[in-house]
Amino acid sequence: IMSLASRSAPMSVSVRGGGSPCVLARSSSLRRYSFVGRIRPGGQRRGVASRVFSLPSNLQSLVGAFQMVPDPMARYKQLLFMAQKLPAMDDVHKVDQNKVEGCVSQVWVIVNLDEDGKLKLEADSDSQLTKGLAALLCKGLTGATPDEVVTLEPTFIEQLGLKQSLTPSRSNGFLNMFRLIQKKAANLA
Image 1 (tube, helix red, strand yellow):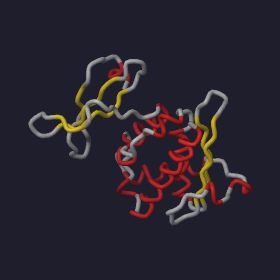
Image 2 (cartoon, one colour):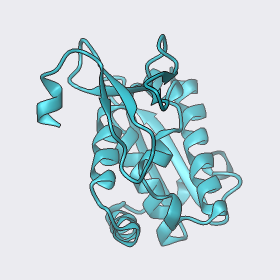
Image 3 (cartoon, rainbow, N blue to C red):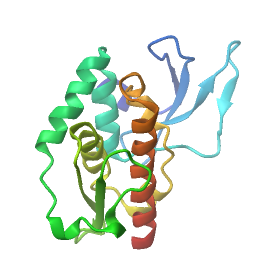
Image 4 (cartoon, rainbow, N blue to C red):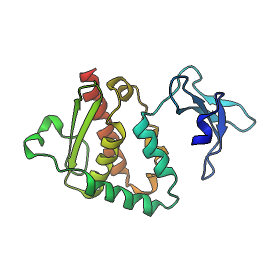
């Protein structure tokens, strides 16, 4: 990534696993690249050139770390490790307004602002795997602004490379967690 940060023009990057190459554009004020679109066979770009999708820096780091792990089972184990590191939520916060609907497991999410106006997330679950997914969202979205989270597209979920490790109901639950975080962030904006 260090070699990418010095470039200023959009660049194309090949995607592992046979996906079509994508175009990344560097933010002028930040040292990060954002997804612009895919490149179709023949070199044509597919995507929205006027709307650059950017990941908050913590989430971008997590996505990069998960993409570097080639084995789906190792990524799964990483989620379980993250679950162990997530502090337990006090039972007084395990209320309906913090509960994620549409999850097979019980999941609760709290979203607050710190003194700098950045998000601080807490979560808990009765399932280790779901707790790992919640930990990933907490770690990746803590420190972002409410606007960054509200405008974030859920494409990062596929970029994490967890699709093979999750059942459809777990994937749906992960998306529901993300949507609840977005809703709570919008209320804080």
